[in-house]
Amino acid sequence: MVHIVNIHEAKTQLSKLIEEVERGEEVTIARAGVPCVKLVAVDPPKREFGFLKGMYPPIPDEVMFAPIPEEDLDEWEASLGIPVRLLP
Image 1: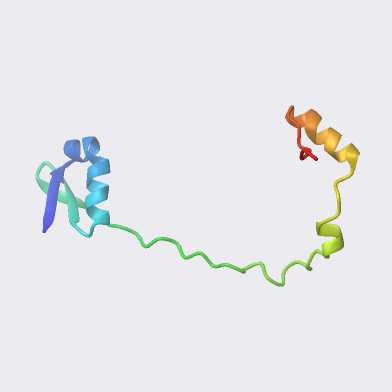
Image 2: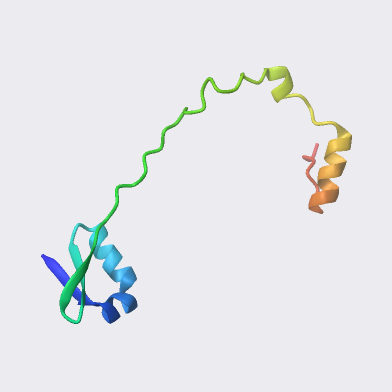
């Protein structure tokens, strides 16, 4: 079923109209009773995981899991104003 609304109603009820379109209903906006715009749902963007694979060399475990130097922790705490060290 096509739901036709005028521009004023579309402005005041936009959220409701978007929900209708997302449910698969057709919504047309009219100016002075003449249809001029159709609201259409878009397909959600596809997420492509792993698209950076091979672009950067892998980080060795001894670098990735190395302890953070105390000087760096001091700088982080000073810049953030909160402690960043885990409790022992």
